[in-house]
Amino acid sequence: MERKNIESFFNRAGEIRALVIGDLMLDEYLWGKAERISPEAPVQVVDVVREDLRLGGAGNVVNNLVTLGCRVAVCSVIGADDNGTLLCHVFSGMGVDTDAVFEDPARRTGKKTRVLATHQQIVRIDRESKEEISSECEEKIIGFLEREGASFHVFVVSDYLKGVLTPRVLRAVIDTGKRLGIPVVVDPKGDDYAKYRGATIITPNRKEAEQASRMAIVDEASLKGAAAKLLADLDLAALLITRSEAGMSLFAADGPSLHIPTVAREVFDVTGAGDTVLAVLSLGLAGGVDLASAARLANTAAGIVVGKLGTSTVTPDEIMVEVCRGHKDSDTKIKNLDVLTRIIEAEKGRGKKIVFTNGCFDLLHVGHVKYLQKARSLGDILVLGLNSDASIRRLKGEKRPLICEEERAHILAALDCIDYVLVFEEDTPLRMITALRPDVLVKGGDYTLDGVVGRDVVESYGGRVELVSFVDGKSTTNIIEKILQSYG
Image (cartoon, rainbow, N blue to C red; front, side):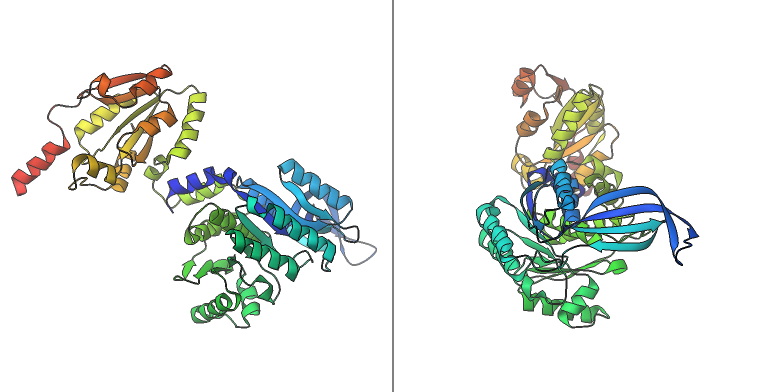
């Protein structure tokens, strides 16, 4: 997946609405120092210096999705207690829809307290209900799915075996997803995966996949065997097995397998990494990203989150920084229109003058460079609209371009005078000019003002058009003719 498309994907995240269904809990962290032994018993005394309360279980999946920019609703059952009230208050502050969080006075809202000293966990204390929710609560969840299910783009199932995801609830979620064409992404637990039958994709780790398939995974062959069994037995569209330091392996029912290596980094805490994988994968599928690209993004996000201590999230900016490590600098200048529109609006807010020009720039030569340098001198930021290959063929014939759009974009992005490159498919750049609203629209001296596409748009809000002369005798056509004369 190209960097510019990843940017566009995260830029659209706010349009995606996800429903997270699963077990909610609070994660409490007590941080302190352990420098002495208790006189009452042979245990360490932890002097607590800091307390931290975070969303746990399915709540951490919600937190990840919100951090990624997604609109989220959560569906679960909690106790009618202080922890439940606090949980809903935190969700409300995050803008999370809690209409489908139902109270049951007979249950306790889960809370896990971890005591840490010098970054080492000393003890964990669990307070929770584990029994299955009542049939009355099941009816409330099923009723919500029937009424509101169609308003979501993805169902995200986070199972911690705390009783919310009963077989009946899971069947309702999966059947509703199938009926409405909504992907159902499941982070499974336990050794009986029959309850997940028919889901779009599940994300077990290696140990969980072994338990569910009843097959030891010791090499690539046994990994493929276990995956094939789970895909067939559970009628899944795909299966993503997370393998710790070995990365991830993606298996599709109708395609080849894909092994994604982990990114080498120092691991501080793997807590919540599975929640991050679930969130990013779900967002990708909801946003129309192909399965392999969504899995790669999830792998990148997991690599970031394990470098943090405690249940954590990862931001789009952090993912983009990691993605950029595998790209050259020119990639950072090539944008899609939706992303560039947002960037240009911010630059205008800082008082920057925006210059726009466009062209084919096939076989870059000194005439092009001089023209672009002159255009850049007319403002603070130069945006270059670059005709796509298909656009050039319509304008110049089937033998052009000589250089494909991807190569032309990277060559031009390497020039210091160009700030952003935008490839467009249309015959004219009118759509881009209308969206970006440049202060200065530049065209070559071979144009007349009346012949400049977008002039009326730019002048309507006070911008201007500038005609810049080309260097005499320097053109792609002349270069082609010279080559033909010398080597034809």
